[in-house]
Image (cartoon, rainbow, N blue to C red; front, side):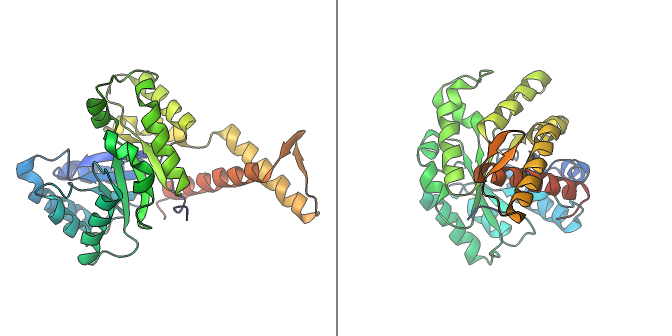
Length: 294
């Protein structure tokens, strides 16, 4: 079953060991906050980072933003304790790093379940190694608890020995395989980060390309990039106006018992109506998020 529709245009990584950053996140216009216990936290700060995250979550104030906790892998010294901690936190999802098999997903899920995680706590998987990409379909179908995939293009580039080029041709195969797996299993999927914070034009182009590929949003490493990601991954005014015309025309045609629908001389089929309805619903959820509601 497809995951519930919600805005995921901008997913900002925030270091779990930094209370000021977690406090600042309450006022940022991102759709998703990823509280990070993994890459952004030094080894000697892993345990205290859990306490910092717990305090931030107790304080609340994050509104309708989707809250995701990125844990360390089960093959590390901190992974089991991170998952046990995550099971009792008021977050929407747990993000697993460097997932390379369906079994890895199910092992993490078993730890969450053993520590009383609610059924509604979703799992997300980082796709950031060649083996993980090759196992994308199996990972995507590992468990009904899985809600999404997140591209980790920085680690992937390291393993592939490839370059970060403007057209991202070195990543096309990996991105495509993961997108196919996500859509085949009704999952959300987020694009990887853009590393050059001084290159605003390059970031905007990367977002446009992510939209063209079919991603739901982009992972971010700095608040300055939120507005551009939100603009790129939201339905445009033109697309939304067309979608509303299609849905209105379809409703009118159904009421009149017509089986063929023409809008501005263009044949509109069921697949066009479904996509139009998705865009209209997404726009509504974005408006709700700005009002601070779920």
